[in-house]
Length: 262
Image (cartoon, rainbow, N blue to C red; front, side, top):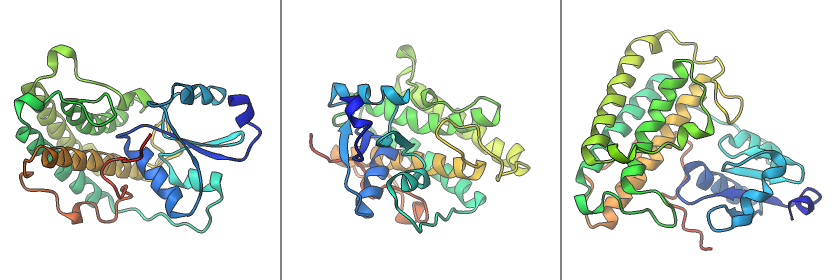
C-alpha cells in the first residue's frame, strides 16, 4: 500500500486526536480548499506503516507522492501542497513571553479545579489522562528551556509522561511551580541577551528561536484551552478563564478538540 502511494499525487495528513499541530494542519488545508485523505494513526494500524518509507513515525505529517512536510511548519506544508502567496506574522518576543507565562499560570489554576476522582480520566479517543495533559503543558516549556541548555528538541521531548510514582496532584503542581520559576528566571536572565533570529535546535524543520518561542506559546495555549474545556465538560466553571486576547495573533487552531469522526 505504501509503495502505491509513492506514485500518486494524493495529499494525505497523518494525525492523532488531541495533537495541536495536527488539528491546525487539517484546518489550514481545509481553509485553503486543499482536499486531503485523513489518516488517524490511532484509529488505523496501517497508517504509521505508510510513513516507514520516509523513515518517519511521528505526527502531524503531510505527504504527497514522494514528498512530505512536517505539519508543525505551515510554510513547509504550503510549499508541498501548492498554496502560494502566504505571509506569516509573528508577535514580538516580549509579548510571546508574557503570554506563555500567563498561559502556564492559567493551566496551573485550572488543574487545581479538577476533582480528585477525575484526575486520571482519559481524553476522548486519546490515551492521555487529564493529569498527563497538564504535565504536557508544562513539559512544553521545560523542553524549551532544555534547548536553551544545549539539549536538542526531539519528537520524544514532547512525548514524556509523569513517572508512575510521581503522578499525583501534588507532583504535577510541584512540576508546574518548578517550570514556571525556571522559565521566569531564564527570561529575566539569559533570555535578555539571546539572538532570537538564530536557528533553534528543533527536530521539525528550520526555525528561529523566536519561531520556537511562538510554537511553545501557542502549543501550551491550545492544551490549556483543552484543560479549560475538560472542566466545562465536568460542569465546572473555569476559574478566571483565559480571555480571547490571550490567543490573538497566535497561529492557533480554531477548534479546541478534533471532532473528526472515524
